[in-house]
Image (tube, rainbow, N blue to C red):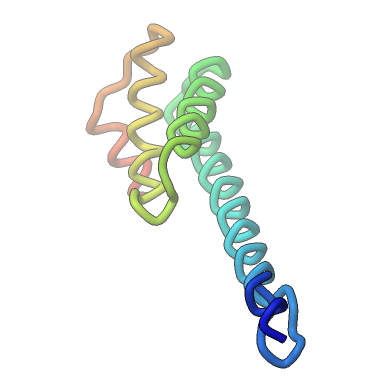
Length: 105
């Protein structure tokens, strides 16, 4: 009995309960990233951006969240920043106020 508890088994023979919570959290994060990337694409279309800066914004978003957790930063705020930065990187400058207005709506 002691060996099972050292190996991480739950009391009562229920194994895998913590893995279920982790799986739910990772699924929730994947859905959040999918929704935010769709938000970036829709915002890019509304702003009249070309496809390369929109794709760059999605890449910047994903690379940012490879290093940090979703719970630390607001994903939609990071998405707005990525749209602005992608416009600068790809030489399609957008006014900050336009990005804020479109993202707010």
